[in-house]
Length: 313
Image: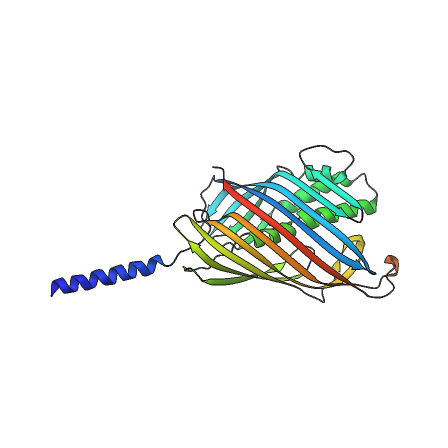
């Protein structure tokens, strides 16, 4: 009898153990002093059709950012970010701005501005599940960098300041980071599990992003996760576009992502993302801008990006 009970107990224990092994807990786990390096390569193309003329704008990023773990508290971590290498190429309306922040180019004011961003520390407070509580210090860095434009004409100053803030300001950075980092569920999951979160669109557009992830495979060291998102703007909110044009935006789109997660930290070792958005801006009538009546402007945005994160120490 005791032998039978022992066998039953062993079978139940093995069954429970096997069941437990089907589930995995994913989260962000750091130790103070750890340093990571993030490499970003991305290209974004925007097509706008104004009065039947197609305007194309491109933005290319080739950046390296260091992330140092400077504080670990219950449920949250503070990471100190620094741009180690910053290359940015902007092309619009027959104007090309190429910036390599490590070199000097007296003929390009934006180069002097981004040089002031290089190696300047700012912090990101992130919860263990990936929700970003706040980004601190970046706005001051960007404001200080704008002093590089002080010798320009007033309208040129404003244009450069807007470009700097739209591409590298707090809202732009947090929005980018929220779409790069997975927000993990609070409970264990198994292969095939899907979960979701939503965050506001930040920066130039106003609206929301609905984020969806699914666990594809995992082992003791890594996990493969697929991601998608649905992007929708608030079509009644007023925006200020380039050249000070006021407009509303009715734009939607999707992002597809593939992640290879390092389970030790929770950070993606590799992430590849593709985004497509399309819709319409409605330029509001403005005599000063020679817009006689509300003007519908079709827009399409395509972004391809890849990221690598490796631990340095």
